Image 1 (cartoon, rainbow, N blue to C red):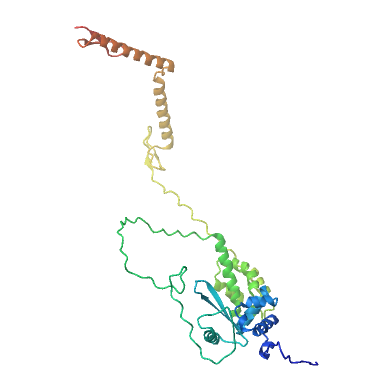
Image 2: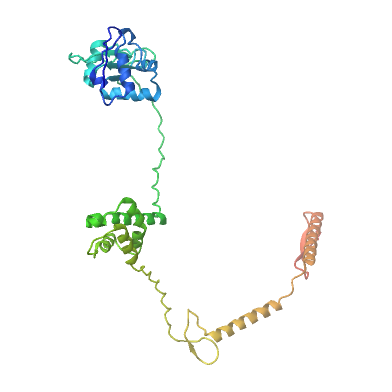
Length: 375
């Protein structure tokens, strides 16, 4: 490669080989670094984003370049609250990488408590200067500075009438029964864990996560049939082939299917015990004396009980048939009206007789009737 380079005599910027040959800085970051390095001091009041916009570095490209410069130590930022309560960002741009302590020392040494958005600095050997103390809260609106502790005292308590507290703590929610889906999921998860643990028992049975997940349902079937995790692991790792296992997935799938135990037989519920057999007793019915075995607390045998029921209902039927037929509804209403009219007539005769009248009982077939006679 031929090289032809002429050193400029004016309008140039000195670039360090450490910057030009930096492997972790993109071309946008290097151009932005050299551009800001050559700016005069009076241009330090502009933000870094404004300088990048003049170079056409905006948006995602600017954020990426700025992040690389911050990571490399060329750019440092601080956030602080200004005199009027607004938050501002101080930026320090250096042409050499600085640590956080060195950048703070340069910022305090160059600018003190009054920082501007952009400052130019170079590596110096000056000792670190402590930062200016934060301003105390003032009377401005909004107040500036850090918040202070609350002032206690000077407050007179107000008498207040406290009522009874009837609040009750919330009752604990009852534990919901485990759903069938959750039980099946736990069995599948337990089977998958057993399959993944086989690698510790034998290196040839090493399974990946996806492989174990594909065989988890077959292993869960063993657990549903009453086989524990230890027994399942023992059944899968015992009596391995002498020439080794060529495919762990195929070997375990074949063993899970071929050695699947029989389902656990659910025992039938015990049958109810037969009722106790009672002793023979003498029947209380009429006729010759005979015995029978009662079922409950009856004192009649079957034939005598049926005969007693027929006799009871026959007597009941005869009693009902001997009763007179009830009057029709028209006759009942006419009788009620007639009795009301008789009562009204008797009241009228009693009112005409006056207080000296004497009530005399007159016999009648329909009941006691009264006649009024004068004195």
